[in-house]
Length: 377
Image (cartoon, rainbow, N blue to C red; front, side, top):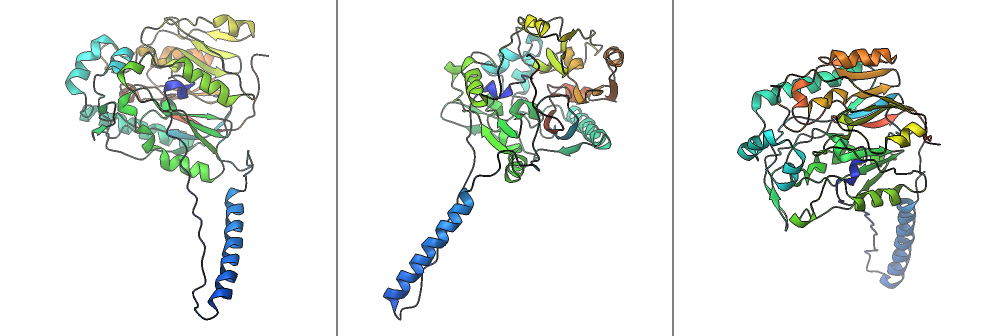
């Protein structure tokens, strides 16, 4: 999905608490002098405590567990989503805008209920196997907390049930040593951040920065599309001056997956969907990039893809510049990678695809071994 995923909405704000305590003298004898002395000592103790609490940490700790500057440096740690308890989202305006018409009856009938039980069971097994393979490749895998997404909730502007904690790249993006948390644009994903809070707090305590983008009300009048200019401007200001934000757009009436449309797989190397051409492709050509057209997907027409298209075949995860995790069923794109000199790690997640994502969507890079560089200068 959209690489600048934090543009999907607004923020919950960072969670932080300070606990400051002091002790007062309790002895009655000589209470004036003792109270003064103990109050004075408590004040000094409190100041020292505050000084210790408020002391600025190293902006980029050497042992920070979070560090990623691109999507092809050697992958060391990753978050992989969960299919457990995934629910069909209610058929609201934003869901209608981003899904294919042939699946609208499915949402209208099953919105608020769990996805088909047998299908979910297969998806869970596939993602477990994917995690095992990542571990075998030397990657540390973290998982979000399992949550019951069928619970109904209500805000002053809407009510909904949840969706899932399956696609961490939708809600999280790592820039350097900072985790930026997106607010999401679907009402069914309003509280999705809860599945990731334990992980993010752990990274935060160990030295990572943590930011949440401004959160919208999700009232009816706010909806236009997945990405909005206010979100882009927020991202641009937040990341300046170290990072530049480039706006790119595509011919796509149902914008849902940037990584099934335009997937950067290496320095100066990008997969570009032939059905959804990039309007700003000259930006990349002028910088000397190689534009690769992926082959037509081979996924059967009768396989359910409730929130995506067949082009999940190009929704791949780079483990480094020479290793890629790719669908075991998609032989044509496997051959394409091999011609590019990239070894393929074949994994079957076809049932997991039905929930709206490929390898790229099902993961969020936490740490890659590399440095910040510019690829347009």
